Length: 411
Image (cartoon, rainbow, N blue to C red):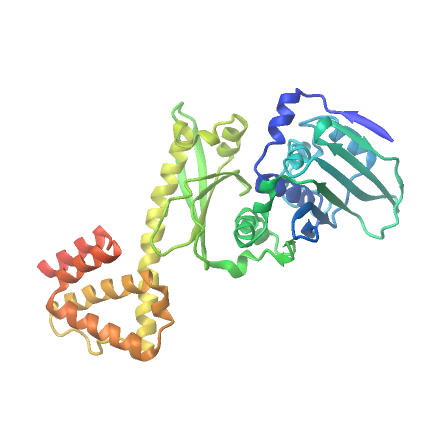
């Protein structure tokens, strides 16, 4: 049995141990992925009353040998990952570089045990590392022994979780985990993360994916930086906002969660090496109070407006094409006059907006949809501007759409 103490100020360790539950859990999953795991299982230990007694993260990575463990558990910032940009065996991009994950585990419970199996020269070796919140910064390493397990990997078990650890369960938590690991799972499709019994599957949850370069940006001090934006549109409602990431797409901070685009559930991943530099300086949490962060967010907002304007037009055309195939679109022949052409464009604006606002309309019966569209056609033909005002009073009809309608009426 060996005991190691971390060489760092105690208040810094306490700050790490007060991380938000999902952030802490994600760090432990990242540790498993950085150890070349192809499968990571996040399990929740419950009691007879369905209360949460603990959390377990199980991976099939290459494990940790005791010699390395003695070094990395004794030094915060001494992670083996700092010297390389790729994982040891599968050469995947590394996430962790500063060794914070093992301390953030204590925000999930007051006792943490790592049971790890590694292999060297054909011999598998197993030992455990144990830490307690009461003696934060001190870890006990058991003597290594020949492993009874046939495969390498690590099991992290966390006991006595706080009340807020319950936020890690349920659909909302799974959605959040999906957002965190979406780009990584897209890049490495052979990797599986099974969260509370359900595999995270961002590919099936995606509705649309796009990537954009944001060009050269100039910071307040004249530094030239590059940034990219990856936009994932989700099939399920609720997700939205910009995630600030390093250049590899690893999320460092979630910003602007209330940045809303009507009818779209999305996550925008803003990627730049400069974001990683800002994170090291502790500036990401300041968000738009930091000039550099504001610069990046403004560029992302401009691109998102362009993206969703285009996507709205594409989705509207898809809806109109589907109605024509179903033979419920109330127009058949081409417009005979410019006035008829304007009327049809006004109808298309109203009808596709209603389709966007009322998802149930898409599931309605053939007769219901045909009746609704025919009635809307008659209203547009007789009182197009009045329809816009009614929609605005009932549905917050977008001002730019109303202006478009008025321009068509007056042309």
